[in-house]
Amino acid sequence: MRGPYRKRRVQRPPQFSNFKPSGIPRKYLDSIELTVDEFEAIRLADYLQKEHAEAAEMMQISRPTFTRLIQQARRKLATAIIEGMELVIIGGNIDFEHTLHRCHDCGEVIQLPVDVSEEDCPGCGSQNVEDLARSFIMGRHHRGGRR
Ligand SMILES: [Zn+2]
Image (cartoon, protein in one colour):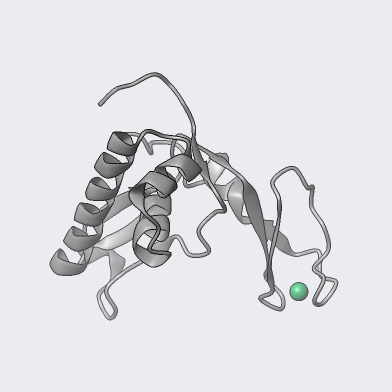
């Protein structure tokens, strides 16, 4: 499975990166990591119901690679919900097409090109805005991601 190093295209970062069974403290749970490219495969094929060929093209990978990616992603999701594991979405070998900025004061989420620098929230003017793509590329989700 180790091919040439090529980044996978992801349209935008996930809005939510951590899921767990309710009512059970995290210290009692095992966790499973879903990479952003696996998340994108699920989003395109299962959420948006795109054909695998189209989804593969959007991610700039071959169709066989997409098929392996989505199989692995589905297996992880199934394992998490059946065995009751914490599911954490982490960075991967990816390039974002867009980013999302989330305002921590009013909750507004807006989509922007990745190279736009920090902007005030259009909803409330707050500067307490998080660039979600950044947290997957260089933040806490990134290191230790590849297995
Ligand atoms: Zn706001």
